[in-house]
Amino acid sequence: MCGIIGIVGQRDVAARLVDGLRRMEYRGYDSAGICTAHDGQLLRRRAEGKLVGLVNELAQNPASGSTGIAHTRWATHGAPVEKNAHPHATEHVALVHNGIIENFKELRDELRADGRTFESETDTEVVVHLISRRIEQGLAPEDAVAEVLPRLRGAFALAIVFRDHPDMLIGARLGSPLVVGYGEGEMYLGSDALALAPLTQQIAYLEEGDWVTITRDSATIRDLDGNTVERAVQESGATAAMIEKGNYNHFMQKEIFEQPTVVAQTLRSYLRPGEQRVALPQIDFDISSIDRVTIVACGTSYYAAMVAKYWFEQFARVPVDIDFASEFRYREPVLTKGGLALFISQSGETADTLAALRHCREQGQVIAAVVNVPTSSMAREADLLLPTHAGPEIGVASTKAFTCQLAVLAALSAHFAVKKGLMDREEEAEVVKHLLEAPACLNAALDHDEDIAAMAHLIAPARDVLYLGRGADFPLALEGALKLKEISYIHAEGYASGEMKHGPIALIDDSVPVIVLAPSGPLFDKTVSNMQEVQARGGKVVLISDAKGIAQAGEDCMAVIEMPKVHPLIAPLVYAVPVQLLAYHVAVAKGTDVDQPRNLAKSVTVE
Ligand code: G6P
Image (cartoon, helix red, strand yellow):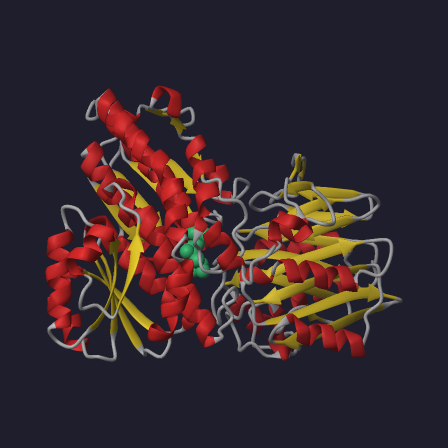
């Protein structure tokens, strides 16, 4: 979602601000803008659409100045047109915002009654007027900001530039992330460390309610009450190379192919192969006493939660509730003491998931989080952090984070079972053995990339596609459908194979490809029966199975995708690969923007 960057520098900053925006393109956006303070003026340039629009605008109307802010906007209030693009500005102040100001209507009414006029439909513009009004009345920037911040309800990360103070910026965060970067004679603000990667590695993460004044050589951080506070400056470890495509055409493609490596990397933290044991980070609560697990997540992370439910229930015999984060708080869930609340998130910043985490904390749950960004809010707020080691994921559609989440969740469920006395040493050794097979099996699945690319043309013309799976492969059917929708804009649905007769079978005809996920194993025959029900009605099936499954049932299929023979435990990891590749190649065949699909954002920081 919206990306923010700010620089108080020593020379013109416009080009570097645009560069910073480029590094945040992956977050998803639909307009962009920049504002510098120069020679007693605020120079603002904005454009709708992709960054090239802003670059062209700057070529025609350059913006000098060694202090400035910039923004990529993902529209919430108001269409993605230039007048709604950030920065929003008065003569005195300009600012960029990530988040939603929930009480903007009442603030706007107040400001209108005060004679102020608005030029955009955004919630953000009230903030600039509130601050500007105080500046015009003679307040210093910091006093104006200190007075306005407590009036804002909702979520925000802000970066603010002042016409008459061209050597400083103010940033603030509540609910949306913002970091401070420490350079040599320069200081920065950014939505994340990656945005600042080529500028500095020295990063301080603002905490909830913090706001900061940066000059070329200082950062003064204050908390909600205005007290000056220290926030540790850490080495971010983010390098510009992390967000380069290398030899791949798209980040999504690169990330799909990274899976064997990053899953192995993740498993290294959770398994002790020599002893054939599962090993989790230090847990300072008694996991064996947990009698209920609630898993909350969004998007692809939610499908990882669905798979985990099968594993937790099967291995640890513990009841598991799963919920979309956006639904969770509002259905007034019953959370009894002694429960574990588990949050799964690539970014660790998804607003709904974070709000659900805080709700569970208030309800006395033990909080665990499976998160890919170790400096994120969720990572910092969890009692038990279970990191995935997927590295930065740039493609909007999540791929490698998903398989790494599954690796962690499989290890966690086995650990849980061991602690509950439900898994003996021999069974644990078996689980470890199968998990260690995953990277090689992922590689074998990736070997079918070219076959999948060759059959993408069969799916690309379709208007609707159905995905079917059973057991722990049912969430994979949902994930396959989500991937296809996200990046190729083809309507797709995932269904539990056995449930197909209760509705979706009415959709079947020869124009609706049906992708069937059916590894050979205990559920194979039943899934194949459902597949035959599709074929009997003229449905065109793509069967994804292993050699044995394909030999048994592949004959009348429109196409088959062969997977290696895998143990059922790791089938969800391995079968993620063909559904990701299929979506990828169909999107490429259709010519869509694979890494930045329309309307989507990488990290959804508004509710
Ligand atoms: C967005 C992304 C998805 C992601 C979901 C949850 O919708 O486009 O790829 O799965 O958010 O994000 P999280 O960071 O919480 O896993």
